Image 1: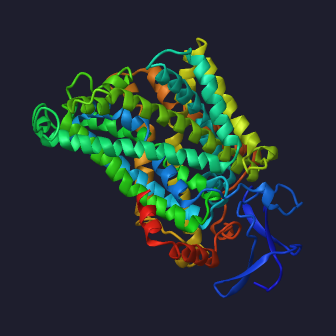
Image 2: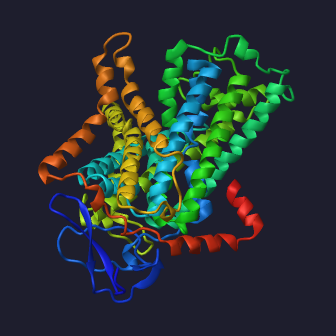
Length: 561
């Protein structure tokens, strides 16, 4: 490459693919050496932006999201995203359905799938920490239609904000009905909207403390459960008593299968670490560390918790199913009662309240950033990418909240049937996104190799490629199509079939519709753009130096929290 002042820009080719072009009009780029070649790197603009016509205007720093998330934010957000109501409320139901051993096996399999996905996403997010994350990668590495469908599929999950806000109103009235549910819902809506409009820093701080509270409660539970099962608390030692009678498995193979399918929903939100990469400080260090730590935390907080629950409680305990979602009969509360801790229900209810508010907050954050990425790729109106003075995509936040908040009021004012159908549409959207991450990663590696690029350019490398991506694809495909098996067995049920699989319809409509209207084609491997928005060896060295100068206690703390 010649030693000139060069700026990269991106245009859409006729077939809808992405190609880099060069422009000599840069005013003040920062030159850096990378692989003994002179290249330019605009330090203020790491976000990829597509421009549908031939015009090009340099994007100033004020139009880019602020990199306000520190390492501690990223780590706790990645962990807090997978510790929620699924663990606190549904874990007992899973044990009652599959038995302690069956539930443990199911959670181990799902944990493996999640970690494989996280390593795939982490490799791409650290190499190219841009707005839109895996939805943008689908546009750049596979096909514009694929990125369009995957992005809008992920955005549609904004509907889950309604479930979380409605649940928060019900949970807080569990103590004492001070106000009706609609009043609490409005208060929570305003709070969540405010947090997402004032910039990523406040979001990161709140999620940090939310996640820390959940972690502390799980740690307290693990200690209490260990004391209960060993006889230190409660009526005496339990050990593996309940693994023998009533047994380690319940419901045969179908019981374990059911938990395998439902356990995946408990891990939804772990992919948020890829979304936050575009607003993270030093992403080449913070994102890989968050992914590595997520693996061990999944083992510790999920696998150990499920194991101890199965030790302390028999699967035939009638309260374990907790069909009504009452915190008074949640599995954590039942273990607290065995230790004669009567305030257990109040503690768990408070933690569940924090969890659902955190989930609503994160849902709005991820959906607004997805809209921001879609607008930059030309797959959503350009005005969606406008930022306020705090660096928040305020129009994307407002638009993302409209559907979810409308559903809150629909669920309140006797429109529960419509609300259930909305939730059914989005039930599998997370798994579709996970499947897309693995597919995009395979395409990323194939193009990377085809262009003769060095693996040393990757700040973080996925675990055991291509096996990690293949495992993720197989397991997510199994969950997507297997989660509705009750529509076929033991007898055909048309309503269940539609409810379980209607979520696949929008994705196919978006993909096929885009292909037909825009006539997009798969991006040739040799034309995949690996330059715009990528990190360089200088970035990696800078992040490494900043990490090395940290005092030892800060480094140790980073591995814990």
